[in-house]
Amino acid sequence: MNVGWFLTEHAVDVTLPEMKETFPGKHGRGDEKERGMTDLDRTRKPNYPIESVDNALKLLLLFAEQKAISVSEASRTIGVAPSTAHRLLSMLQYYGFVSQNPTTRSYEAGSALINMGLSVVRDMDIRSLARPFMEELRSEVGETVHLTILQGKNVLFIETVESLQALRVGDRTGISLPAHCTASGKALLADLPLERLHELFPSERISGLTPNSLTSREALERELNLVREHGYATNFEESEPDVSAIAAVIHGRMSRLKTSLTVSAPSTRLHEDQVARIAEATVRTAVEIGKLLA
Image (cartoon, rainbow, N blue to C red; front, side, top):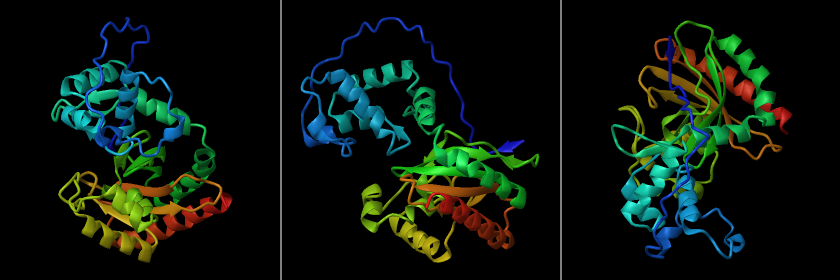
């Protein structure tokens, strides 16, 4: 029995019919339309951009900063009519780049988008380099070990070594979660300058995933101070019920990625008296990996 988030892959039909619908013209050209593209080099923008493609790509870029996007949010952010935003999201859904949550009706990253991201990191040296250390750490603590990177205010799980126990936290490779709700995310956020943290969390109120999640920036900053003091981060059922975790940042000058190492376990096995032992092993392993990236 696995405890945890799992990546559900959806088949995408590669023999797609012609796209017959054309998208309407421009709706507004205010500053709001440029949000979500602050990291792009404006000087390299094409002289003759295709409006529908431009807007679709802007929508995809939003998923680097947030987990879910509603039609109204998409409309407001890229500066198009709600009907246009809905058609864009529907086409992205058709190709598997987004999927619609049946409960909230908001759109989330789809299998095609996730698989594209994984194809980029699949051959990363950090994954093959870290794997033997992750396996040793798994053997030492007996629990599942994850490797994560920071993407905006989310963390993406890029590698997992599962525990061999019957009841365990499962493979989360490909899953993206709010950084402030996870041990790995808090470890990575604690490494950021305060100005960058405020850019990621401009409002005092932040959304959580469980009743134990941090829901204010003030509480998050207090938690991050503890992470810096202790050298590791914890998560006690903040990302999902019955799952707890301990994480440490991997520092290495050769890697531009913000990476962390995490041990996750069912909460019934990760008691407070186990924290010091697992944290010591996690920090030690993170340092060993970091030495190879120095």
